[in-house]
Image (cartoon, rainbow, N blue to C red):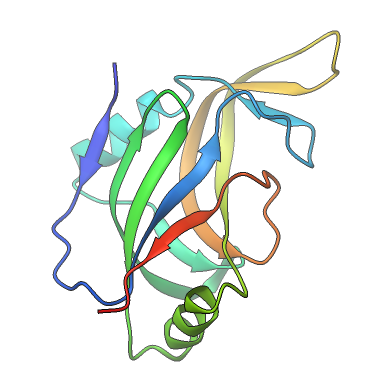
Length: 152
């Protein structure tokens, strides 16, 4: 079962989409997100009528825009968002994304439940509290990237 959270996207230019997290991939921090790890947190955000923050490089002083759609599917956490063009950092991020200079996505979260894989020694994240999703130069999960940037 997939859980979806969506807000209305009011513009086209600066709309981005991609995967903020991929399931069953061991990242650079030796974490592996399990399928279903986002189920409770997406439900909680939906009940609040809000979304996690969109930040630049995990810096809470540098918001970039708003996430408008999040859902888990078989691959991971799919996201869509809108850069707030006119904000200096969002304008810079938009240009860098358009040119392919940056494309990374990374999640900021609190671990609620995890276990350790005895073979790989990776921490398996079973339940997480998603706080923010950042555009980053280098994400811990190299597969978590922006896949599309709308320019018109």
